[in-house]
Image (cartoon, rainbow, N blue to C red; front, side, top):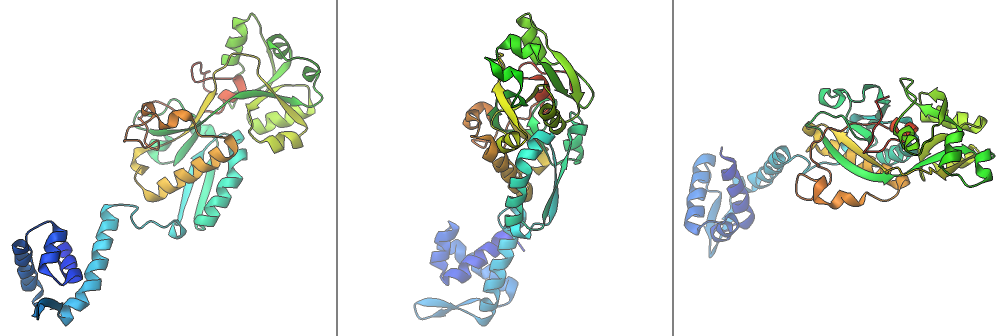
Length: 343
């Protein structure tokens, strides 16, 4: 049966009036009367019969009224995903690719929010091992989180926040005995963070412009190990401003502004467009974004501007760009303008 005929039946049974049904259907009473005649033939029942000045439903019509309404709602749910979405019933596992520095700051908050709203949803965090590859396209990863670059051209992205690099060292480090300028910063021994053992990046380029050079004394594969090493030595590492302040304090570390002219880091998320309209995936992206913005600060002001959108004013549907996830840039002071070799 024509779906439009079912919608007309639903309205006729709600109104018990051809005239009022015609108004809701946006048609004439004569056309609504012809539709009722078609429905009577199809159902084999009068459906609505005269009773004085009005019409009343037949017993068969009363049986159909709730059934037709439920059927149409089900059709709407199929044709308009998300119309009946309720996270509490969602049973799904989402995979997020992120650096350990971001993971440490948001995993707890995200887990609490998800457990409260969707107790059957699990989250798997992966390191940036497949960064720059086809993980999103192949469906190995649901969301990439970090500094974005080198993604497939169709990938959707959303900018979340803008963060500043800071130096981090143990509280008793000699650097804190005086003003930390570029020369004293370069003179300290540094910790590099790279999964592939790379040592140099844009921060070294910024120092070179000032005629300075730093020594990368140790290279480690993660931000967690870098912070632990900085706690126990006079080596200097890099981190994000106002990120994990309690952890920094508990480890006996202090942060300080990097005395170089470095652009801030734009943190964002990326996903494949096949998941853009999926209600469960959209719900998860919103919760992930909220977890990032909670400890990280305020949302990037550019999020509401036209250069970050493709679908009206939705910041969740930015232009597909060649971006990818990379927090390894923090170790070398990378900026969006001057990215290091991938590490």
